[in-house]
Image 1 (cartoon, one colour):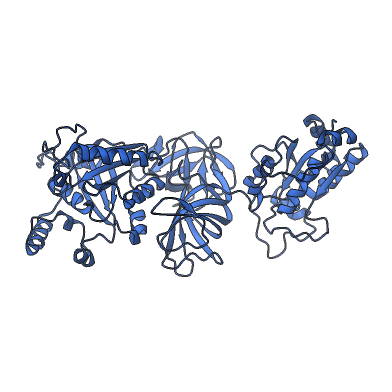
Image 2 (cartoon, rainbow, N blue to C red):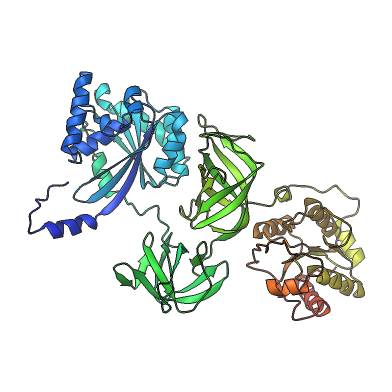
Length: 620
């Protein structure tokens, strides 16, 4: 409780000071019997964070066992834990000093409790890993350090424990430090701190007993009191998932939630996703009153100047700093379900304030928890760590987990049992199925006629024209109008279109099938103007096609008619009575925007001819 003497005169000041103390969350990880629970018990005991009845109970239990006080009993509260002498469940304990408040998570070291360890580490600012000085660095030590790094914990304190059993020899400590430093260089910790200690004897835990005169780095408590705890918070990218629309009366409408990252102030312009409507911040309200400025991880209510249609699951961001809008993405997951992953069924994922149905498209690899190598697999079971590709049924607004641990994290839920079966960390948008093979290293069959000879004979350079937009936005109409216009100019073009009546196998999501993309590459390689007319709703897919074009001329044209206009123009039944409105990721840098609800296909084609001439498509 600290050393301040509390009196009736200073009680209010003391309580206010305690309330405003900075909070540090740390997790203890490591192998079995490395002394994690003992370290926590010693911290609680030496900082006076133990109640008298708890201390008496532990002394009584220790006396029955015929030994000195067993500090691990302060955390190992389950009967099974005490009987086996191991930690099974995650135990949370609390204590404070003059400088900070602390929440500790004591996690299991056994391999079969990996999911418990990952749960306890998921909210930590610091990971404290213990290594037995007698045994050195073990596979489990590496495994837990890898998981801590995977979860984005920025700071790692490596406590070389049980130094009393090695006579506090400096060479023992230095050997372990050198070996583990080399391993940690492969991980993404911002800082790794090494401390020699004895949790049982209390040396270098709270007090420096002078047993390691060769070490000048301070105790573990001193480190925990000064380590930066905001290092894991993204302070640059404003993300505000809306949790609730607060409307107590007609004159008040606010969006309530917790700021996931970044900051906001009155007068800032915000954009609501997915509507992309903009408005300015009128006020930032809290229980204690209005604020002029707020930052992560504060819980606030934001009022806007305009009445924009936003609700739970939407996200407020700044217009010049947008998250990724994805439906397919790659993620690393820690599988927590008793039943193995079933790729034939749909799951739910909880991401910020959204609940979205997803399909598990493929398992890319499993992480071998002994060697940390990536190995191919199709099956994911309890406690496995895997990288998978997920396909969501609606657009999500995400950031890579390494950049933003809030908008980059999610959990997977079994919709039948409502159990959480996995925790996930987003790696980034996924490339379309099959498109990942369309890279520069994929060589076309060799021809006896060079590309330059074809261009000279045809009198054109050729290239790839990608028409993208919602169904019924006019892609096919424009594609054939452009083809005819080019023919009249004595230029050769070919259209790749799913709606040409030839019964191609077109994916339901509107993405271009691999065969059509490969055919487009071959046509472009033959100096033709190739017009690819597919919806392609995923931005990542279109980026992959642009990359596959290499150095060939390329333009992306966005048919920008609104959803309502597309429904009016629909003649093929794309928007039938049982349809679901498509999720479409609008291009961020299209070469040209055209709206066929405002101009004819022939007028649009004429405009597009000018762009192709400018880009060099029509020159030899």
